[in-house]
Every structure is written in structure tokens, then in C-alpha cells.
Amino acid sequence: MRRHARIITVIIAAYLVTWIGGWFAHQREMSVLAQRLYNDAERTNAKFIEWERQGAGKVKPIELLPGGPKAGVNWCFPILPGVLVVDSSYVVGPIFGKGTTKIVLFYGFGSITLMELWGWIS
Image (cartoon, rainbow, N blue to C red; front, side):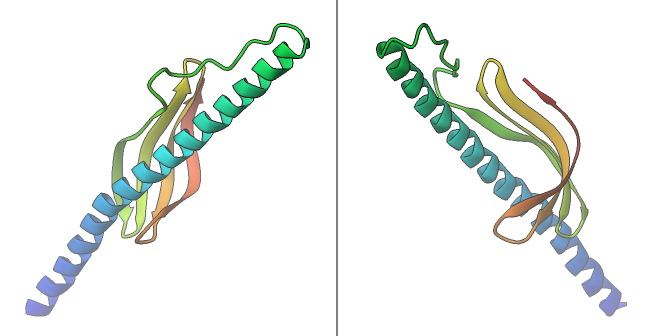
């Protein structure tokens, strides 16, 4: 009986580590992605301004959120140790964002998206 209790404890611990660690790892990765996209859009806007200054005509810049990008994990749930179903999103501007529900592999210090199930793009 003690052996079964230990096995169950290890399995529960694996699920909890997957759940908590996967949530934080994926949250961090979504924030990094959103910030990278935001920075890329700012560089593109700077190029647009330079082109306009050089006489290329009127260029409409990419509209960005004033306070920076928003990213987050809305919810996640472990389906196996190391594997989660995650719903996350990022928004860089009013019409520049993406949200998906996906299957994610958590490997201890990061995560990899294995498959996107459904989502939205703006």
C-alpha cells in the first residue's frame, strides 16, 4: 500500500509541476514574443517615417498599444506530465494580435507549442 501511495504522490507532483511551471514558462515566452513583435513594429514605423521624410508619400504607421504589448495565459491544464492544453494570447496593437488554444510541451525551463487547436487573429 505504501508503494502505491508513493507512486500516486509522484504522479500528482509531476502534474502540479507541469501545471505551475508550464504556466509561468509559457507566460514568459508569450511576453517575450509580444515584446519582440512590438519592437519590430516600432522599427518598421521608424522606417516609414524616414521614407515619408524622403518624399516617398504618405505612409500609415502600424498602430501600437500606447503602454506596450499585452500578453498572457488565460488558462492552462495538464493532460499528461509535461503536456498542457493552454489558451494564451498577445496584443501588440488594436489590429495586431493573436490568441490560440494549443497543446504545449513543458520541458522544465521552457515550452514548445506542439499543435494549435483553434484561435483568433486580429
